[in-house]
Amino acid sequence: MEFGIAFAIAIVSFVLMILRASLRVLPEWERAVVLRLGRLQGVRGPGLIFLIPVIDSARIVDTRIVTMDVPRQETMTSDNVPVMVDAVVLFKVVEPKDAIVQITDFIRTSSLIAQTTLRSVIGQVELDDLLARREDINLRLQTIIDEQTEAYGVKVNSVEVRDVSLPEEMKRAMARQAESERERRAKIINAEGEFQAAEKLVQAARMISEQPAALQLRYLQTLAEIATENNSTTIFPVPIDLLRAFMEKNNK
View 1 (cartoon, one colour):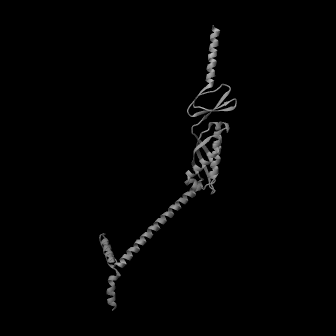
View 2 (spheres, one colour; view 1 turned 30 degrees about the vertical axis):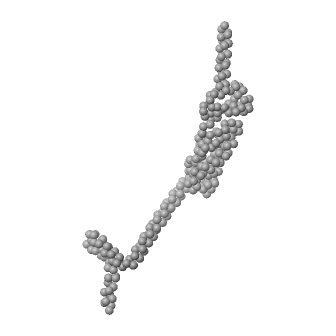
View 3 (cartoon, one colour; view 1 turned 180 degrees about the vertical axis):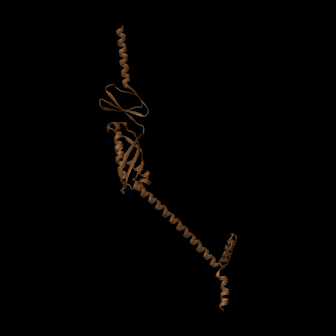
């Protein structure tokens, strides 16, 4: 009797062990690539999956978006400026079967491809484009990396150039260039103001020459402005036209 109970307990324990080894529950973001005796059987999950012990083996693949830092790369732009650039790549596995069967380590491979592509693309652009057209460079990086990772089931969602470090002498040169540019613009604005003021003076002179009375009115207005100031001595000009008649009379 005791032997029968022990045997039953052993059988139940063995069955539980088999079920525990055979049944697996995968969350929503995981997929299992199942191999049976080394041959691909397919992709299973999420939820409850059944595996034959010893015969079946499963490789779990995470299908969520992975954030991968691209280490800082030292490269040279097309206009021969040395820069240090790093980036971040967002990608996800869209074909778990290819990510397991077609390549040994898709994460490491994606990282190496991103590093090589980053150096290559930065070497084909000028420094001004690297600083001012960052979005175009990001899109170009994403396209190139995605074309290479597509072969093993990885989709690149986005690539962002995170930081661009310049040598100190280049930073000083750019600061001097920016200062010179500001001075140039200030001189241009000042010259444009002088030009506009000269145009207005020419127009005023033309109007006064056509209407001599306007000159007398302007003269009287100037005297009124001087008189409002508390000066002990007031010096004001006398138009030569007022004295011309007397001068002609004396000459006669």
